[in-house]
Length: 155
Picture 1 (cartoon, rainbow, N blue to C red):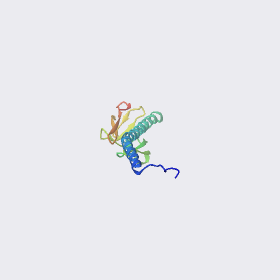
Picture 2: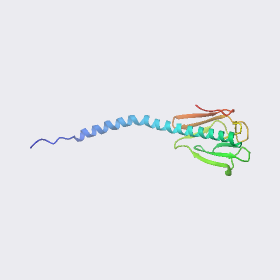
Picture 3: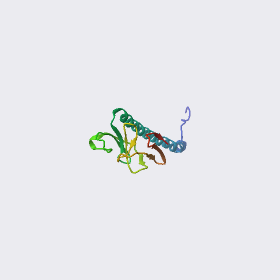
């Protein structure tokens, strides 16, 4: 015989597989948190961009535009053609869903934010709007704050 064929034993292969499984288990937690943080960041930025777009259109087109939080994970953009501060079915511009696993809640009972042609936010009864919208996923959360003067910021 020229020589013995060398290879890995079953025990050696199993030890390597166990070590890899442990390392993957350690890395999975931070990776999952990073994915959730990224989804949350994307949802908040999209919502703020839509708020700013509705505000911009209200300022430039001389008609009120708004957003209504229609559920715990989606909202609608609309134009208030009749000036009654509420969204009618014919006024809906779009439906936007949040990424899976993300929900939001508001600090006040009204779920409608409407912008005047001067950039002032109103609620569904045409009163001044100010409040917080909190986006949550698992243990992470971000809050969008809208002041009664129309300033939008993220906390």
